[in-house]
Length: 487
Ligand code: SIN
Image 1 (cartoon, helix red, strand yellow):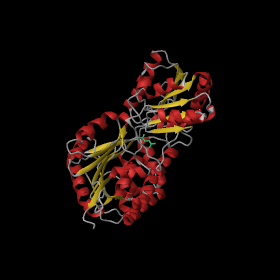
Image 2 (cartoon, rainbow, N blue to C red; image 1 turned 90 degrees about the horizontal axis):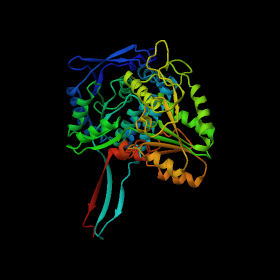
Image 3 (cartoon, protein in one colour; image 1 turned 120 degrees about the vertical axis):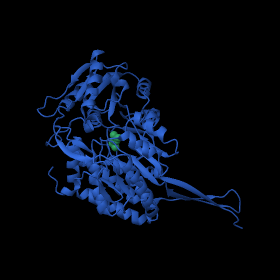
Image 4 (cartoon, protein in one colour; image 1 turned 60 degrees about the horizontal axis):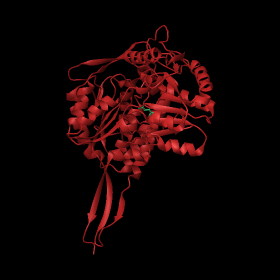
């Protein structure tokens, strides 16, 4: 890997301000998903190391929480500035271990850094209230205090931004953190650790523990009374396990879980804009985001025109190595992800769906994890593409007739993360936006992710909000002081 700053490439975990190997000397291999090339053997830590990290974070909390908001903000700003300064190196590491195209990886680095900048600013705005007392001699004041040690378990699809989105508000609030990045993409996390060290966070404030034993690490984090908050981004299945495991210590928990996003196109929509939005929201990161549109619903009178234009646009999406200029769709993360996509496409075609494009692995010389961008029409609600989170570059396009019908279809899922629709009638826009049972609604846009807005879901997509002024709340406790005897 041709990095300008070669020291960003680390293979050890970062605990209490020290880069450490696993005590048992175990390592895990990190490979490039595009061609399977071996990138690194990273120390494979376990329960001992994560316990050490929790202890370090707990000790550091006593120091960090006493820093003034301004001092915490200054260090966060420095971290942001370093991420921007080394964005190209960070993007190269990200593409090489995760696969997404370099331009998209650079976008993720900047997106991730924007959370650090935003929460550095928010650190100074952790306000309390004064409340009129319930008696003339009473005064009531609230203050907000950091919850304590935060455990952050982050996914492989955004190896950088999902870390900063959790860690920046935690640090701004005065919490300390133990991060467990995905074992598929630990290098981006460790590079962020190098820059955090350089920014001046005291030892123990940020800890990064790489491990292939996610269940043991998760269980240790959940069981520890020292960890006061768990923030997890990943599958609904794992989120439920962590939520149950957090019950015994009654932790604060935030969960950003799976989605099954509807993307609705009404007959008065600008069809060309809707096609662009549907491309952006479906094929970002080869369809591997929780907010990717999963089910496209198009009103019957414009269905054929939309499918034809959308299919043409999908065929233009070039697929290949994330490092090649012009690639917009990179590889999927691992073999089982490709196999899952193959299974949902096979299920749909066996039940009568029509393949408009793609529908198979790309026959690249050295890229077996590339799956061709796929459009399916004549799909129905009995198919897996309606019920399951596809998490790959496959777009099923459903036909609907009425607003009532499409709302019912869109809400017919246990998930409630992102949703999208295109249309112009302003009364319908309000009705539909209010009726969709989702935490986020994109209206005439396919891109909703930004540090300034509260990202998060409802139903089995989880709870808690990341980003925006609300993103800090999950890392703060409210304390109310009742002052008596004011005569
Ligand atoms: C995710 O897929 O979990 C996050 C996507 C985003 O932040 O846009």
